[in-house]
Amino acid sequence: MPKENKSASKQDSSVPEDPRQKEFLDSLPKEARQKLEDIKKKLELLKTEVLKKFDKYIVGVSLLPPQQSQAPPPNAEPGANAPQVPPPDNEKINVLILIDDSDSQSMSKVELKTKLTQIIEKAAQDIDPNLNPMTVILSELWQNCFDGKFEMLQTIALGAPIYDTGMLSAIKIAEIHKTMVIKKFEKYIVSYVLAGSLVQGKATKTSDIDVWIVIDDTDVKKMTRAELKDKLRAIIIGMGMEAGELTGIRNKLNIQVYILTDFWDSLKEANPIIFTLLRDGVPFYDRGIFMPWKQLLKSGKIKPSAEAIDMFMSSGEQMLRRVELKLKEIGMEDIYYAILTPSQAALMMYGIPPPAPKETADLLRQIFVEKEKMFRAEDVKILENVVKIRKDIEHGTKKELSGKEVDTLLGDADKFLKAIKKLFAQIEVKREEQDVATIYENMVTVVRDILRLENVSKMPENEMIRIFNEELVVPGKVPARYKRLLETVVKAKKDYDTNRLSKNEVEEVKKISGELFKFLVEYLQRKRGREIERAKIRVKHGDKYGEVLLLDDIAYIIHDIDNEDRNISKARLMPSGRLGQIEASNLEELERAVAKVVIPPKVFIKEPIFEDMKVIFGRDVEVLLNY
Image 1 (tube, rainbow, N blue to C red):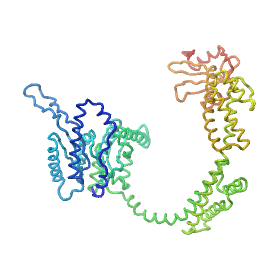
Image 2: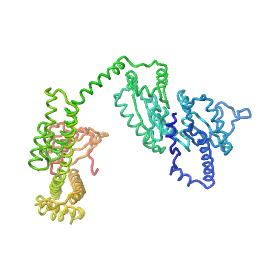
Image 3: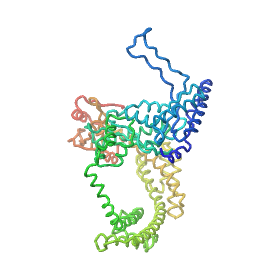
Image 4: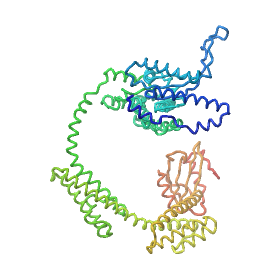
């Protein structure tokens, strides 16, 4: 690891105290708590000592769980000749010291590990003979992963970090996330790889933890490869968030998901990202795909295709041609749309459907310059000039656009956008005032609909509050506070009509009307729902449930209410009570019919319809009562 990166990573690498750990310690018996505090002090002393001596190399110090006792061989016979397995030494305090050996040049990796191990063990013994440091160099850890030996990763994931420059956290969350992913999707996961700055020796405390997951899509039959990738990717990223919550390492895991066929295509196309992943990545799980590719790349046997080489070679010429065209595009497209689109938005905000580009400047002048006096004529001329230049370039009457002309266009466009921003603010004020009128009209409509269900056929606007009170509030059907909210809306409409409505009052009316409108609509729906129930016959046929809804002279038949498709049909209701010819229908048609129909207080069912239901649902049909 380069020194400058190391020094940057040392900034406050101490692990912050976890509130959950404090809560756990407080719950322990006094004796156990004291023992843990003693261990903590010894570990702090050891950490301080090793950092003082080897700060350049130390990337992590972690307390490891106690060693488990080894079980005897499965075929061992009980008795005197059985091999004696020594019990674990529970007094030992196992500590991992993780060393970055990537910058070691004066001695071999083995010599570095041996030297550091001897010094660290002596320092540990001087503090407490029970301190048992385990010195691990990164190259050794990664080599274990290359060899398919992942036990050390599991051990690190179980540890409690005391000092961490970011590597221990990365291994911990990646190992936990990997375990979750493989447990659920082992059939599909080909490789799980740690990559990015962490394995390149360039990481800092703020670096992301980059992991790559390759999914096997070669045996997919029930869905497309893209669907498989999207489905698994969403779940895998969700597991990453869950792993972050479990470990307290939040918003650090950066997960990339590849399907196997795409991964292979990227190799053939010489995708630099994939080549870097193979070169630097460390597999945390591999089903024999990633490591062979890595070895082939290392030995120079994975080479870009001829098409990829040609593409890279031609990219330089293509970029130069793009530069030549870019100035024209800036004037022809970018600046054009930068001022045209906001102009259309202003007209839409005013209430006009989005106009065609060639009509926009004329409409701006007619409405905002001449009618509303909100906009200046010279600002409209900026738009007209840009439209003209674009047309000249498009038709070939203007062959090129100079840098000076682009600068002028950009300056004019900036002036135009500032003017449009002011125009938006003015339109917003006007719209807010008009919103009050719309709110009032909607409120009158919904109150009329509710009163109609309460058998009040007429409601003059000037008597709305009185009738609302007598029919709904006094009988206790609606709380009195909603009458007061309705009075506020009515008063706001009167103030709006006399131009006495302030901006704050507009906002208050919007807030009040939202609550009132929601309550009234829900009341209307409940009332409507109870009416619909009176016209409904529910039946059971076999293991399915159906419904017949009698609306005026049409009966709608839902063959299976639990099925998402429902299978809806309809038939005319004859005067005799029988059903006419059955035709196909759908949910949208049924909903429109329900919205229009007026359900009478009582619905009568004639006996012939029950015979028709035997034909529709089968002879075993049963009519449900009081369901």
